[in-house]
Length: 383
Image (tube, rainbow, N blue to C red; front, side, top):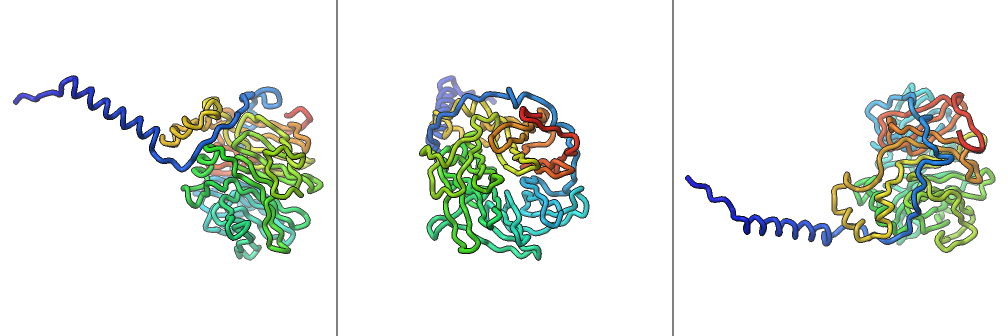
């Protein structure tokens, strides 16, 4: 029996059809984001205070069993170590990792928490909103909206002031984790789009009122208070910078150039994530991933970014893994820098400092990494 092979014209026709379909898909297939142009600064690389080192290598580990992703870690008023993990659990343990238990599961995903004067955990849950969790494990939603028509889409980080005011970030009003497949997926969409809808909110427990402090941030992330409680430090993940903002600001657009909001650190070598107050005035910053030159080169090419969103997420230029946390003082001077080029502890999102240990947060690690504080040294020029 003779098999008839397709002729060259048929093969070329099929190839042209496949190519046309691929081009049509890359150019026309609907995607949820509408990327906008923005002027990304040229990445400085790891130089100066961020010169390459291996001071974050060789972390000791606290096993978390089946739990993954200790995104935020803090010591509670009871002296216990708390961690928020991907499963939705908030786990509690001794500072050395023993006597681990599930404190509570919120049914969402807590990304940041602090404690108020009553000993309640105040949690920013990316799915549920701003929560209060009492020592008896009772969970209360404090707020999930600014007004009836203005929901909180992506509660991310939180800090409680001495006067009871709760400041927290709403990373994106465009992409909520509840709708877009989780916190990581929603963050990728927001940062690829660059519509800068992130904001800082303030909740007053006395009046149960939520107000907008500032808006116009490209993925508003970690937050910390100044020592005098007059200023907020806020990470803008999507544009590689850290802001210092007047806590009294009211519905301020940070892009208008007001003296109430100024960039304290600009053009960072990676994506800044959590902010945590440490000892002796330090503020710890986690760099989730280093910058990718390919991503920066597309900053002013929104059409190409839209095409990329039609590809598998694994092909997006989001940067390679690299362990990196650093500390600053309130004037933005780098006082410590710890790196692990091998990224043995993946996606370091922040650091929590105690008298004995420096705990490292992570989005995807299977344990809590830590270093003895006694091995660390600090100065005005870095470590």
